[in-house]
Image 1 (tube, rainbow, N blue to C red):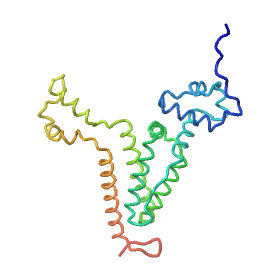
Image 2 (image 1 turned 30 degrees about the horizontal axis):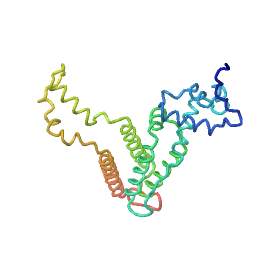
Image 3 (image 1 turned 90 degrees about the vertical axis):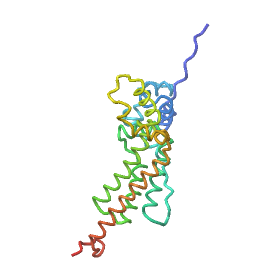
Length: 241
């Protein structure tokens, strides 16, 4: 009785960089970054691992291509008019919403820092808003980093599961009640116990909106203070005497 035939290998004509990235995205979604190997990818494509290197230089190159493709649809629904803070808030919410659709890609982006054209365009949009608001040079770059890192960091924590989630507090207090050799006593964390009903509420949308408001309020106050110290002279401006 003839043995079972193996899957027919993908021919070179069908094995393209685009197809490799598509299949890799699928593997990433089911197995995570640790389960995405060149061997597993080659098996999924029905080819040999060495065939992949005709289209991707390395696994690092593959990961960069995955991040770039996952973020390519990144779009920002920004108000055409209004305060710059409203536009930046919309930018932050749009970025968060898009990144949450590709949680495994976010982990690669945060850990490896892979280049993505869409993210560079997003940064360019953000800097344009900040420049129009009055931020210049170093201040604009710093504000951009604060906004970008606050958004990326929140999404990364959101996807992993916040360290201080409701279950964290429940387990910690139960351990204290049992003793369990904990270095703390219940009275040492009386404030935590008193606020437990609120700590058990995990409304991440509300938390992120609060972060956005507080960050932008601080940046707006700083911009107003800087503007008050500087008297514009032409386009560049100059210090008031």
